Image 1 (tube, rainbow, N blue to C red):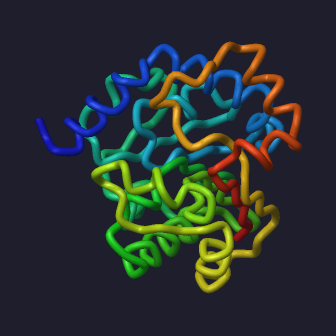
Image 2 (image 1 turned 135 degrees about the horizontal axis):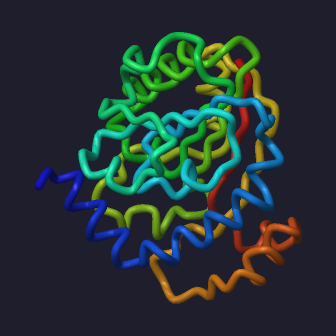
Length: 217
């Protein structure tokens, strides 16, 4: 088993795969689906076990991850590539309307590698396409951020936005505090609570420790 497979297995099984899938169903139906056109081709970058791409509404679904176990968890309508995020040429140029990634950029080794990923995403997006990024905001998760063994690159909503602009993107939306930091705890995730949280942006300001940045090509 690769190191990446071990990390995924250890971390996600602690949370509970069924629990994660249930939460992401609500996140997609009540939030992310409204950001994606009905006819869109969506690429999930570093798709993990497919919690987002399995549940999001899209005309065509694509996924990339370097974990060889990932395709076991993806729905049959998803095209998958076992590839690093630094080179998306296997997917093609200007093929996606939306690229989404969640809790991935912090695993990159440094800003140089992040620049390479941003350039790869820019290439795979169609003109006018959007890059939606969610991840831990070092401003608000500066303590617990380092509790994960494979975290290397600390980013805030501001530093990420600057990096995106340098890479040729235009920032459309920048939410400093969106979701809580992690599901690897005993915090309640009942369906009605997740729906209520999404419907109450005021609560994000107190509980949110992850940014949500949307940038356009």
